[in-house]
Image (cartoon, rainbow, N blue to C red; front, side, top):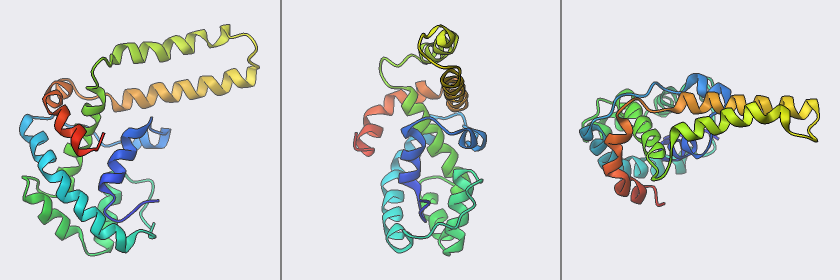
Length: 188
């Protein structure tokens, strides 16, 4: 369910698993991060989370945003409908953001890079594992043609989702020094 401020829960949902085909198609463009942008996001996280809690209690049962929109556009639409966009923009302005259009791509890019910065995670190996599973699918005994078709579609979707989420060059290196702070913020 889309919730009013939606920020923390939506950010966590975005990174909890692979994107659906529709989500991959409307995933926001990631931006190149700088240490200052990451620090601004980290500083804004708890206040935005508190904002979310305040407004979520009031609007929790409302789901009227256009689901075909990107996360930032859905959030802007909900905040506008409740007269809270100006308040949100003023909140994030305290942390160096111009508003939701500026805050969201930094938040999204930071969280994606954080996920890719997991120690021991090898993006090339993850991609190669999906490609190998696709290549080996026809060699699997006991799978019906329908099952092979279903698994092929799932693996192809996983590969597309993975490619859509890959951070721009340099973002993982920028976020890595902030892993402990981000991990603490996310309660991991």
